[in-house]
Image (spheres, rainbow, N blue to C red):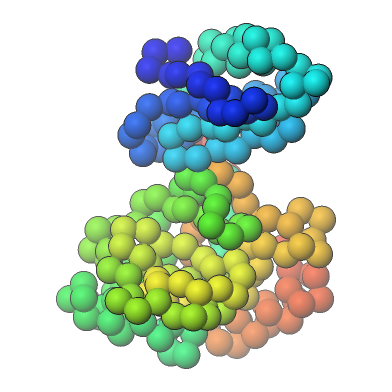
Amino acid sequence: MQNIKILTAGDSSLLVEFGSEISPQINQKIAATVKLMHEQNIEGVVDVIPAFCSLLINYDPRVIRYEQMKKRIEGILKVDVRAGAQTKKIFEIPVLYGGEYGPDLPYIAEHAGLSQEEVVKIHSSSDYLIYMLGFLPGFCYLGGLDERIHTPRLANPRLRIPAGSVGIGGSQTGIYPLDSPGGWQLMGMTPVKTYDPARETPILVQAGEYIRFVPIDEAEYKRIAELVDRGEYECPIRREEA
């Protein structure tokens, strides 16, 4: 458990700090720890919330005491959870880039000194690790954006960004799951709902999984959107050895 700290976070939570570096290796350790906790089904655990470098564990002190909870966590952390034993789960998210769907794509390309086609190719050529969820339900903090297309946020944020918008904010890229204000540069839109409260599993993806953006044309966008509205669309998923 070198460099891992277990701290109190109020009277019903523990915070496990895995370090201070944002890295795929630490994220994979966190994801593996979450998996072990779910498998052990510890009585009294209310929620397990992963972040970039830490894991918040909420528990019911009427069911399990702090000392017991800490001891259980220490035991889990001793288990070998090396990343090599995992399989990458990659969600293929279709995206219609540019035009009215991605009004800031010309600026992103100009800022990078590239053509719009080159920006799209770069953006859709990586598997993005989901470090954590936050800000909005289903909003993914993704890692792995190519430095060539890092783009500063808008000087004046928009009051409303449509759900499904795909954008870049500095060194990160992501999908807006709901209509909301925001300052990211919009490069495209997906018909897939990463958050749908009517769905059996409202949030499509989880921390530790991956997203790959797949370029589509407008006809394919509308076809998928109709399937999504009818509840008949299933997002393609690939699995690869990590």
